[in-house]
Image (cartoon, rainbow, N blue to C red; front, top):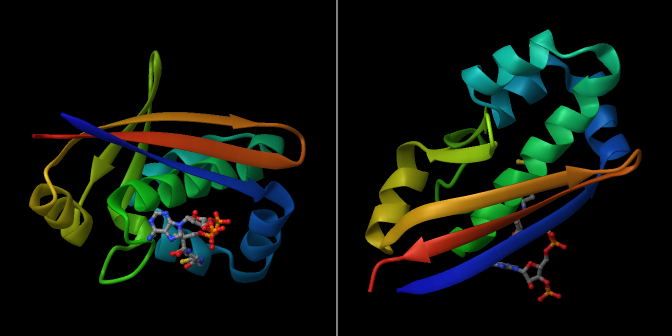
Length: 128
Ligand SMILES: CC(C)(COP(=O)(O)OP(=O)(O)OC[C@H]1O[C@@H](n2cnc3c(N)ncnc32)[C@H](O)[C@@H]1OP(=O)(O)O)[C@@H](O)C(=O)NCCC(=O)NCCS
């Protein structure tokens, strides 16, 4: 068994600015439909931190994949699910295909934020 970490830290104001500028275009480019549905139900103050934490999580997972957002690995295909007991990651499309190819069998995710920053750490477990 092999493990690999990915970490990301971002300013919430950066994501807020993008959302204020691009609105639905940003949502549809970066986030999966299930994430957008959760976002829409959030209170106004919780909206930008939610987007920022999920984006940090997507970047952290892209580092576990070792690709960043290149070669068809899209933020939208790295889906963050809020579950009782903590967040979970679901991979779709090319991200799922690539994960399979490199033997990535599980990703553990943790996220946090302050008034200013959002961060995420992803730990991938690989077979063999
Ligand atoms: C890998 C990636 C996610 C790095 O993200 P970033 O926010 O630009 O940079 P960060 O400061 O978070 O991370 C940089 C560190 O990640 C690590 N890193 C770089 N490429 C990596 C890769 N392919 N896999 C794993 N880790 C990587 C390095 O340690 C690097 O630090 P170093 O240059 O001092 O060694 C980046 O390549 C990427 O794809 N960014 C997407 C940005 C983007 O597309 N934004 C618009 C929204 S679609």
